[in-house]
Structure formats: C-alpha cells, structure tokens
Image (cartoon, rainbow, N blue to C red):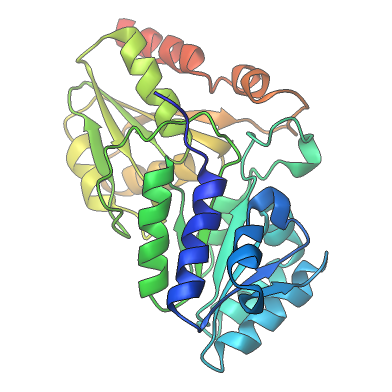
Length: 308
C-alpha cells in the first residue's frame, strides 16, 4: 500500500476550512513550504498570515484573534512551537481557554534527517500537563483529516501532533476520530500493546511479523482526554502491558498508562520509546532502529515477553 503524506493532508484540509469559513485563518512561522501550510496561501491569501520566526509573538497574535471571534490555526515545527512559546501557550491560550488550534509539525524523531535539534520528544508530556488543552496524535492521513474536522467543530485550545513521515498508508480503515476515544486494532492476550501516533503502524507491522493471536493492540490517538475505560477493560484481561511511542518514555503515553494502571489495576509495564538521552542524527529508519522503535525491534520485544 502506498504511503499518504500527513503534512500534505493537513495543508489540504486546512485549505478547505479557510474556504468554507471566513473566520478560519492560518498563522505560519516561516516554515509553510515544509509544514504544507502554504497550501492555504495558494487558495486564499487573505487567510494566511506570515508571522516569521517568532513563535511567542505568533501565539500571542493568535490569542488576540481568537478573542474577537477569529479561529486561528498556528503551525510550526513541534519542537519550536512547544518549547519556545510554552509560556504564552499556558498563560494566554490555556488559562483564557482561547479557541486556538496549535499544530506541531515534524513531530517526534521522523523528521527526514533534519538533525536532533529538530526532534520533538517531550511535547506530549508538556501539553498533557496543561489544563483546558486537548492533545491529539493521529496514526495515518485519514485519521488526521478526521481529527481536524473535530478540532474545527470543538471550541477551546487543542494541540495536533503531525508527523513528517510519508511512508504510512491509510491502514486504519477510515473510522472517524473521536476525541477521548481509543481503538481496538487486535484483540487477543495475554500481552496488551498500547501505541499512539506513527508508532501504531510500526506495531501493526510487528504483529504481522509475529503472526500471533496472543496480543491485544490498542491505538490511542487522543492523548488528552485519554480513554482510561478502554485501557482498564483490556488491561484486566492481560498479564503484561507494552507502550510504544515516538517520544520520551517519561510523561508521554508510557507515563500516562503507568499512572492509570498503578492507581487502578497494577500491571508490569514495558515502555518502548526514546530513553533518557538526547537523540542522534540519521535517517528515519536509522533512528527507529537505534531507539528500539522499528517493527523488527518491537516484534523482538514482544517475542521475549511472550516467551516468559
């Protein structure tokens, strides 16, 4: 199956939104040709605001626009948007519950050899701690498009994690995204694998390699609100839990799952993700392999757990 670009889909869907609703505008941090926000510029120049490399100011302008009824979508590389403008996002966006949509493009490790300064590996942790903030990490282009529809229809601050990876085909079947809901992609046991974002496709490939019916696989595109009910229902039937994320293992999906289970149904949790170290430079495939996130590495980890 051919890969479908998430960033192209993002640009196309937002272009449709600005044409159907004059209140929707796009704010760009001088990266539109990479994030594909320039799709908006091509179809409706009046809805495109070039804010330059000044993320803090860009977020401040978005808050002002939101408070007079405009619907701003702010986009930059995830690592720049989340860390440089974090104070403005907490104080001005979240505390006022402003209707600002924040788009972290080039998220995680898979940034096509840009280098470690461009890797965003703590954004899920940072944004999950902010009151009023919803956090979404879709797995394929169709789910991203569906999530953007929900974001448009829902008032309040929301963060969307968009991967640069363009190799992922539409493998989820087009089921509509629901805020706060996870999905069961495989139902077996006694190993429960929980994944989010692009890593859900790597887990799917790993399970195809293993050809086992001994694993239940949950996809969690909604990091906040989180589908605690679905996690607990399936964790109760399993002996071990594995989390897989393209993010630091602390505070992200693995941290959320470990917190919920430790309080309500303690289980042994194996967290697969980037450990306590700065990432290196390399191709997407090299970085996945180096951090135990390739389908082969995930399959090996699951195989060892099944053998215990």
